[in-house]
Amino acid sequence: MEPIITEEKGNLQEITVEENYVFTFTRKSTGAAIRVQTRPTIFPDGFFEQRGIVEFGIPREATEEERRIFETWERGVRDKFMSFSEEELFTFE
Figure 1 (cartoon, rainbow, N blue to C red):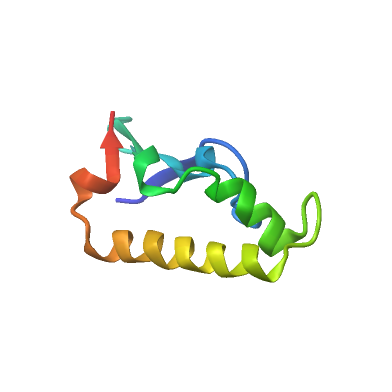
Figure 2 (cartoon, rainbow, N blue to C red; figure 1 turned 30 degrees about the horizontal axis):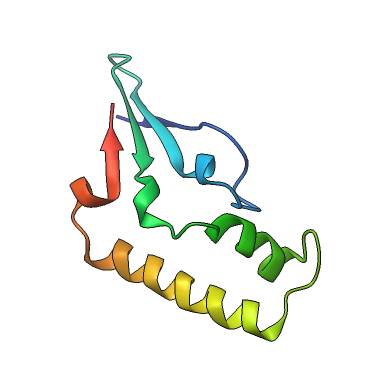
């Protein structure tokens, strides 16, 4: 049984927006699907904008302070993914 995984928006190369953390899993044999989305509260306000600056230089290069702040935020998000329950991390539809 091989599932179908569908990315809702964006791409895996530059995950810079919250909408990139939405997936639909479909069982091929039945067509049953579930949509899984990361809860917005997992990411600090401004996380994706800051990521664009720090990791991609969009729209400008990051300052050392911005890099330091983003590294702290990124570590916090990673810690949440490692320690929170599925219900705390995701919504399921």
